[in-house]
Structures are given as C-alpha cells and as structure tokens.
Length: 135
Image (cartoon, rainbow, N blue to C red; front, side):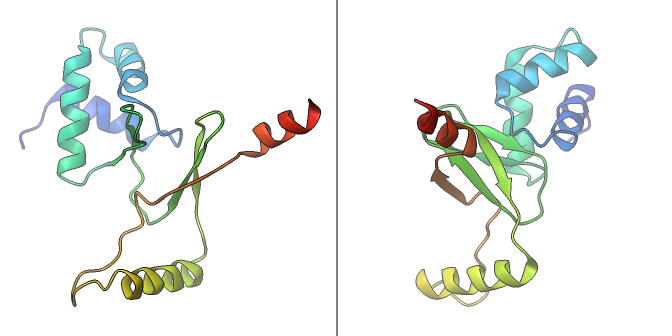
C-alpha cells in the first residue's frame, strides 16, 4: 500500500485516541488537520488500515462500526443502554487464562490462537446504572 497524506492523518488520529470513534467522528477530526479530506476517503482509509492490521474495526451490529488504533490485546465493553464503548485490559495472567479457555472451548486448530483485540462484552455502564437508581 503506497503512502498517502490522508491515510497518515487517519492513522495518526486513531493512534492518539482511546475513544473508539466512528468513521464520521474520525472525519470530523481529520478535517481539522486536512480540510479537503472527504468522508469517502476516511471510510476507505479506515477500511484499508483495518485490512492490513494497522487498526481494529469493532463491529457493534448496529451498522455503525467503531475503530481502535491500539493493537495490544484487550477486551471492549459496550453499554447496552447508552452505547458507550470502553477498553478492559486484564492482567497478562488473566488474559492468558482467558485465551487458553477460548482455545479449548472453540477447539481451535494447532497454530491458530484466540485473538481478543475485538472481543466485545455487553453490559450496563456505571453512569447508566446510577441513572436508573436515581429514578
């Protein structure tokens, strides 16, 4: 893949945020740095970066994928009430145990390892739980 200024802008945005932005949110940030960038260019570059493993695409099932520029193994927690997405980073020991369980449970072939970069768990965040209690 050849270098492009637009792709480097998109990648830089992804490496500097932990917010798991949508393509539209990346587009808004990219326009601040590269005013002539188009939304289609942002979508295309996010997809290309995800395909080559520079970022992760997080499909949430609502057609509004999120993106993550941090490739170290971790989980994603999504609130089923407000849609907030956040990282969960267990210790290496706990991650190792979870990977072993996944590999045994899913009967992965030898040489294939479980990847947790896009693993998603659903629940209710603290803010939504507190809001429900207040009502």
